[in-house]
Image 1: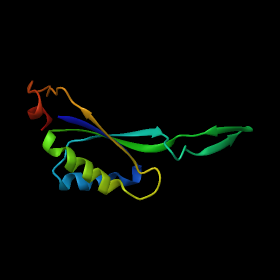
Image 2: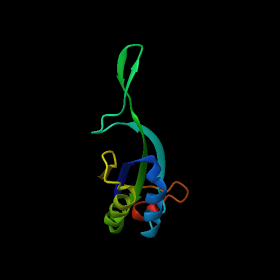
Image 3: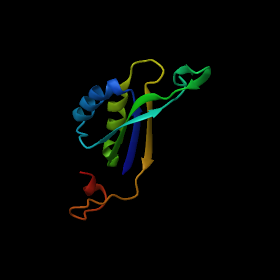
Length: 112
């Protein structure tokens, strides 16, 4: 089991979601977040002081069984790609256990 975290451009969420549905990955958590990467955010001058701001991003969190890892990564990459800096990142983490609260099922079966 893997836990996939992706940071993408907010305007690419619908495309990424469609691509995930095409590979039968339907369970995900979406959050609006702020951050900056290589593009280093935007620069603002406020009362004579230069401030580096954070950019709006969208964070996807998806738990998948091993068979769905590569299709999930490919779907996110396909849906989020613009070719410009700031397209995002995908992090793949080992997932030790999952527990479905309602039924107490554990492991891959609890993912869905």
